[in-house]
Amino acid sequence: MSGIPPEPTDMPSGAVPAQHRRPPQEPAQPHRLPAYLQPYPSKGQPNWAPPPPPSPPAWVIASRAKAPAPVTAGALWAAFAAATLSALLLGDGFGLNLLFVAVPAAVAAALAGRAARRRPGPWALLHAAAGLGLLAVPALRDAGWPSFLGVAAALALGSLALNGGRSWPGALLGTVGMWIDVAPGVGWAWKGLRELTGESRERWWPAIRAAGVAAGLVLVFGALFAGADAAFADLLGKFVPHLSPGDIPLRVLFFVAGLLVALAAARAAAAPRRWDRIRTGPGRARGRLEWALPLVVLAVLFITFNAVQLAVLFGGYRKVLDETGLTYSQYARQGFWQLLMATLLILLVIAVALRWAPRGAARDRLLVRCVLGTLCGLTLVVVASALRRMELYVDAYGLTRLRISVAGAELWLGLVIVLIMAAGVFGSRWLPRAIVAGAAVGVLAFGLASPDGLIAQQQVTGYGNSGKIDLAYLRNLSADAVPALDRLPEPQRSCALGKIRDALEEAKPWYATSLGVARARRILAERPLLNDNPCAAAGFYGYEG
Image (cartoon, rainbow, N blue to C red; front, top):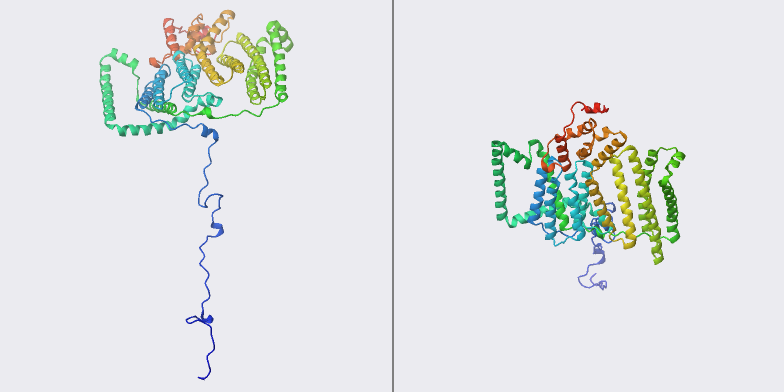
């Protein structure tokens, strides 16, 4: 056995034979989630990133305001004064107190705009002055409906003065833009108040404590002196509002409302919304035939209608009434509302036509001016015809609040058409602001004209001519009608003024009493009414007294 040589091998020393080697192991794979648990991959971003929020519309981005300047101490004090006057004065009614509240609110806006280095332009000053002037309507008139229009128009003009508005979006949205700053105004004021009190606490707190002590002393000693002397109490009652525990919720509500409006005005003055940056591009221009043919046909229809109106106006009423079977007043009433609607629709037609008007060459612009100018001129004849029909209807049935209101609206629409015609000649950049100013002038003229007084005067004049009068309607008018109704003979006078006298028995402070109420009380004090059932003596049995 020892003589057998070993088998030859080429394995190096220390190598492991193949039968003793371990099988090769695969590399470890990372742990993976099942497919149903994996998030849906979005293009261009990691799987775990949330989707981006939707971007706001382009007009919102364009109209955003800049960051406002910090609020000043003067603006905060003015806003607090407006809120305090609102709580003390507005709970008794509306009159001169609206002006007293509006002045410190305007001062707060002026101080905030000055801190932001903003200078008001001529149009802003005009709108602000017109807004304050419109607040004179409730101070002069007792009727609620023209006073409401005056206050609403004053707020719209104040907002427009703060935000500005040269374009159509600016003029329309600027009238309500201030109300968007109500919530931001509170945060802006609170942030500024914290900064002011943190920097100069040693100056603020002594002043606040001194004001509180002074108010307490005035209240205590004022109450003592009022109880000691009746004349002093009467004088104090004329200038100091009467406060009772039941009035506290209403006073708090007026305080909050006054503070919110004043802060919103100041915030808008510091950083106004840029409504003029909203772009409304013109529509796709139409061809001359496509654009002009419908308008020319409409103009022919207007010409035909106006020709008939002119023929009727110059003595053809009797023939028209015989052919239609209508009475004089029915003919007038039937046409007015249709003509008012036609005036409104023609303004819409003009707006759409301007958007699609051809504008490629000078001949196109000349065509647009000629066709639309002709339509505007014919519409003015329609306005005159509508007003003439209203005059006929009033002559037959008398003047009422609804009739005088729609007649005023028709007059304003006529003014708008005149302004559109002027814009076609001199350019239209000033047109949006001019129309807003025209509306403000119309509301102011409507309030100053005393609609209830005009109604009463027309009824009294008609009674002198025909012996007919609507006492049921006249009894529901405001104190503005007293000077005209005072001209009626008895017992019609006492019957017409009885309900108004009862409404005037509630005494109000001087700042919540209009000039119309003061004049009516003076007239009724000089000539007292009859007390033995004057309405029955006048043949009117709808009311007693």
